[in-house]
Amino acid sequence: MSEPLLEIQHLKKYFPIKQGLLNKTVANVKAVDDISLTIGRGETFGLVGESGSGKSTVGRSIVRLTEKTSGDILFKGQDIYKLSGEELRKIRPQMQLIFQDPYSSLNPRVRVGDAIGEALLDHGLAPKNEIRDRVKEVLGLCGLSSYHIDRFPHEFSGGQRQRIGIARALILNPDLIIADEPVSALDVSIQAQIINLFRKLQEDRGLTYLFISHDLSVVEHLCTRIGVMYLGTMMETGSRDELFKNPLHPYTKALLSAVPVPIPKLKRERIVLKGDIPSPVNPPSGCKFHTRCPFAVERCKSEVPEFRNVGSDHFVACHLV
Image (cartoon, rainbow, N blue to C red; front, side):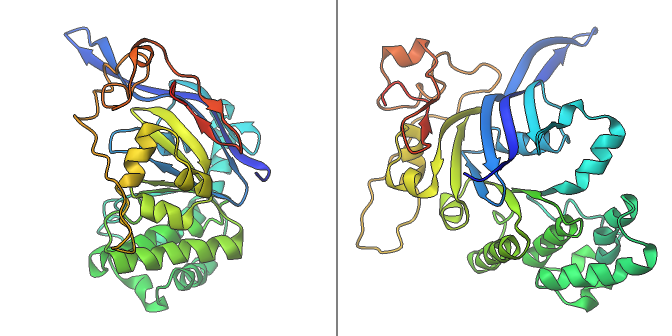
């Protein structure tokens, strides 16, 4: 792996549940429960898992839209949670988040040119008379035309709005882009265009991505390394090729079995998990996946598996491996 750009160490994020007149905390939603990962400069790390596994919370914690409960997040060797307000403001342009729903992140009363360029003004990165030219330039990079600059969000299609979201992140010339389900709401043809755009921008600008998705077929085409999350915990990480050819955790195998096969004659055994994902308020003891795992043994119910290296930078948390 190349030089680390982002390091996450034992990150936890709990959301308190409060009740009563005294607003007393009675329980916690354990959205992220002790995960660690490292992303090298210039690589694309895919974070996958079912809805409710804590993927988006990880992304929001990195840029401090959500404050962590504990753990360390190092960006370029700096702990971003130890930075002062002014120091954090200076580093924010280097870390940008692309939201899952671009329409909800755009003000319907603000023209897209102003929405894209406002960050440059806010951070003092360009004089006012240069903003419009910079916005047109980044719109062109994202596959939009210069005349789109004066339109409102409702005048665009879903794919175009996502390109606007990418342009908003890109105009600050960041080092790290966190893309939270950026193609999940788009049809297949538009998905391919956006994925190709991500690739081209990475080649041209040396960007680093944290790509959050539940769609493994998309992750396979874009990411160099992949992490699999379940109920706030990292189950398995490894290179794309290693994970797809040799998945070790039963949960990873179940996710991969759902990926469509491009050649109909090739058959893949479908692994259907029983039951629903447990509540993050009261997760199962031991291995959190044992309540749905078809191979679980007694040890899985009581003992938390160690997240260990099984070779070739392939890590897995499973007693059966």
